[in-house]
Amino acid sequence: MDEKTARKYRLLGTLPSALKQPRAYRTRKDPFAELWLKVQARLEAEPRLQAKTLFDWLQRECPERLTQSQCRTFERRVRQWRATAGLARPVM
Image (cartoon, rainbow, N blue to C red):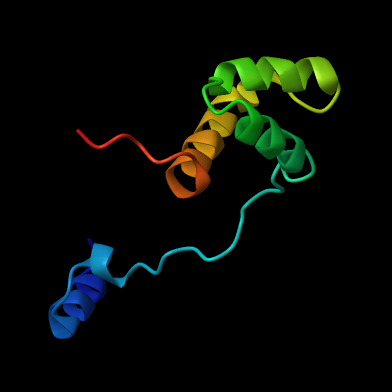
């Protein structure tokens, strides 16, 4: 680490990781933005469908728009939807 950089952090009294601001913008276009309404309707109709099954269905519907490398992104999006708008989990 450069001497000037170390001096800056010592004067500020914080770690470099504490100074980093969270990103408030998207780095790339959302590949599921236009398809999400169809997916959401399918999830509401059949909430027990797995994300992988839905992704395979989407690939059959729009084969030119989606690649297999986008599957994990889609799984995260479905998991987020289930946490915020999906069915409530049973309380034991």
